[in-house]
Length: 108
Image 1 (cartoon, one colour):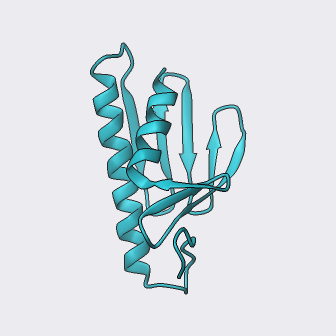
Image 2 (tube, helix red, strand yellow):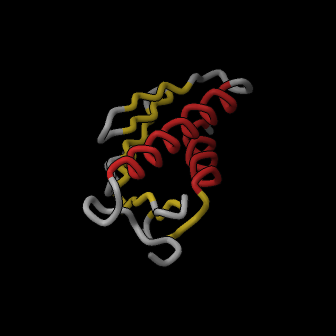
């Protein structure tokens, strides 16, 4: 697979997808906690096998294996890639940088 290729069931082992999903959720949780240190708001992260929900006050982001939805109901394509990157709305970036940016932007 080329760099930034999205993961899809059947193309690689399910356990790799689960590990990447767990890693992304862990990064969202960690950055939520870190950004909460200097904020009046606390991030709440709910994680399931097919859903990650990040909530800060009345704002939220919901991730599935194929899309991210914002609290304003804007939905964009989302994919975890085999090389540990994330493709969000056609832009590929490192997983940790994407998690930090999304969390920071939500908590502002």
